[in-house]
Image 1 (tube, one colour):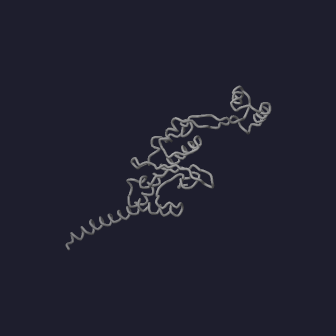
Image 2 (cartoon, one colour):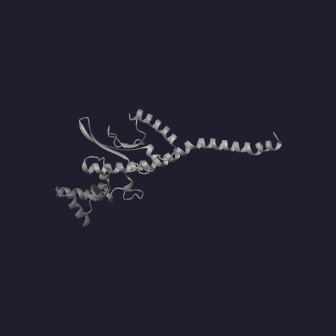
Image 3 (tube, helix red, strand yellow):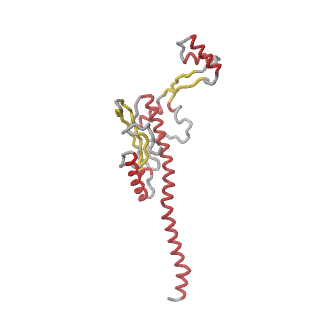
Length: 237
């Protein structure tokens, strides 16, 4: 081997090979790190969407006595319906208002909250609660700049996959209990990311869910349950 070839190998080829090997080693280490970082960012968006569905479902049940499996029904409820909201007038810490209210109720035991509100508007120093009918859209999410009703039905980052929503009524200890469940899979949420790492995640999540919830075939995020009451908790909580 000539001296020139040795120099080329020593000073050019071998260093390039070492750099390439180092690059691939770093990449193999960073791939799962970057995967988990992006997974956490996507989960944050998805969890907020499931929480918003839960908020709407809870309000819907308060007004109707049931949950719904229809996203269109939830949207219509948000846009077109009203809900009862209890408003506190005055403060229980105001001793004068409390005393005035007690005297008023003793004089007129049949006085309604509406009549008390009229007296309050005329300057009476009172404390009481009154129930109002307020449009749902003026009550829920009205201070949320990131809330988008049209996106509610879809898994974020999926390109249009739908969130699965179910509702049921189960008899628990002789009592009929309305239940709902909304879920999305990691297969949809992590679309476009490293497929092998996602497959590995699915396997570990299914094993964990089998031990914790008895649902071995599910890997993803879920709020509520149609199999057993869980206070509409999310599986991330």
